[in-house]
Image 1: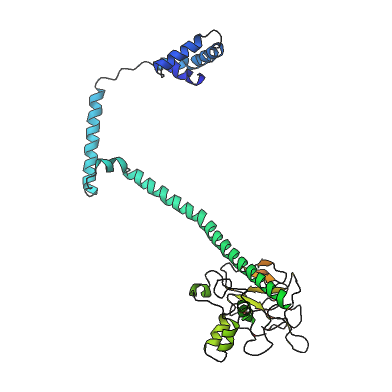
Image 2: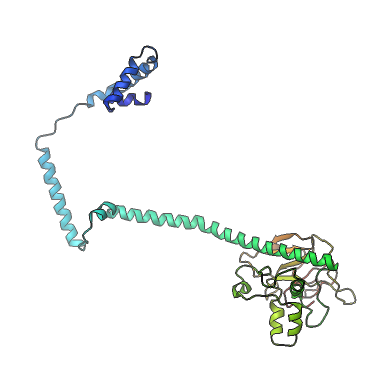
Amino acid sequence: MREDLVGHLLGALEPSESKAIEIALADPHSGSGLRNDFERLRLALKPLAGDRDVLPAPAGLAGRTMRFIVEQEAAAKAAADRTLPMPRVLSAEDAASRPSGSRAWIDRVIVAATALAACVLVAPLLLDSIGQARARRAERNLLKTSGALQGYADAHRVFPTPPGSGPLSRAGLYAPTLVSEQRLGADDGTLICPDTALSKSGTFRVPTLEELNAAVGKPQFEEMVRTMGGDFGYTLGHRDASGTLQPNLDRRRAHHPLMADAPNEGGERSSNHPDGIHHVLYEDGHVKRVAPTDLHRDDHLFKNHDGNVAAGIDEEDAVIGDSEDQP
């Protein structure tokens, strides 16, 4: 009721509403507080009483106003005829819905500014979301492979280890080994990363050990060993003092890399991810994201202590080799 007192004082309410307020003001029990508010508002609005009367219009105002409107319309039409092409005839609906020239220009500026702001604000978030999704997929693939490797180690007491020499002495031999034991699918995408050449080819498939052995000496063999490890590299193990390649034992070392994003041709970093982040799987089964600046901080990930792409020179010398690299 109080919110309608101003309208009642200004005569802006419907008769029924004003009548209800008058009845409430006259109530001897509940109307005292309302009457106090009404009186305070009446005093506050009293200075406006002098402006309530309608002032008479000056003589001839209507005629002068109409002549001014006609003159302005004629001048505007003449200017439009000189500078603008004849517009097409708009329907009533078009005329009602289409903004005027200045309004349309302002609307276009607002739309453009909004779109630009959306791009500036949303694009980085979108790119970051895509990057995060890519990273999570790489981590999931490594963790899945880690489970397959651990299952193999539980059964054989060692992780997959290539022979010390010969055509099958390659880092990527771990993949056909796991596929042949049905611990990984040959073409389930576990060993590839998003948007790499292998993933875009749509034809990547890990060969079995039998297929690999059958291809030795044939033209397709080199292509097989080049791609069989997928987009990930695998440990090249280490050789003892006599030069013998040692089995990849499961020592559960949290600091010792077992797999990682495969190195590119330069051998200093991987090209799997645009942001340069590398994913490293350690012997104990955990996966860590490593920035390029930290990749070789304590030990070069892709070279042994002698600076070669070969097996480590001792059991603490971890080296991740690409699929075709030999220990």
